[in-house]
Image (tube, rainbow, N blue to C red; front, top):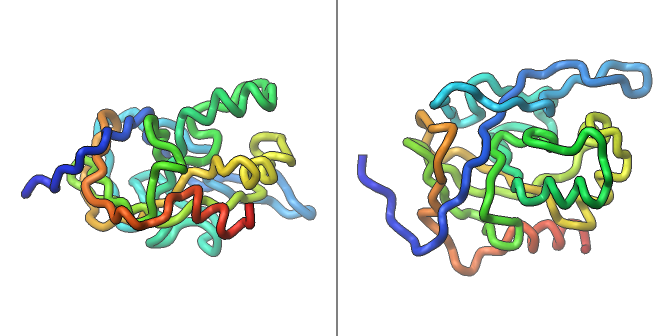
Length: 196
C-alpha cells in the first residue's frame, strides 16, 4: 500500500481508543435511556475499523449519533484537567467521559479543520463536524450545566467519517495527510452553528 503524502504538521497523539455497547444509563420521563456513552479503553493492540464504527462499538440512537459522517468521535485529553479544575467534579472526568472513541493529544478544535484527512494504521479518517451536546452526557456526568458549558467553551471534540477502513493500532500517533488550507476549523463551525 502506498504511503500517504506528508504534510509538515505535527502528529496527533493517541492517548486511548475506547468502545462500548449500549446499556441503560438511567431514566427520562419514566422510560429507560439507552446509550453507549460509557466508553472503555481497548486492551488489544489493534482493532478493526469499518465505515460505521470500531469493532465492539455501537450507538444507541442513530438519529443523533453514528452513521457514515459520525463513525468515530475524538476528544482532546487536554480538556479533561480544565473541566476538572473548573467544575471540581468527584470523581474527576477521565478517558471516555465524553463518550469519545479516540482520546487525543496535541490538537484542539481551533486547529483541526473540516475535511482534514488523518492516517491511522491502514485506515483513513476525514474530519466531518463538531459534536453537538447530548442530554446523555449530562446524565452520566451528573452535571446538567455541562451542555451549556460545552457550547460556551467550544470544547466539543469532532467526528470523523471513514474514507478507508482497516486494522488500526490502539497506540502511536495519527498523521494529518491531507488538508484544505481554506477549510474552517471545528471551533469556527461550532461558533457558526451556535451563534457564539
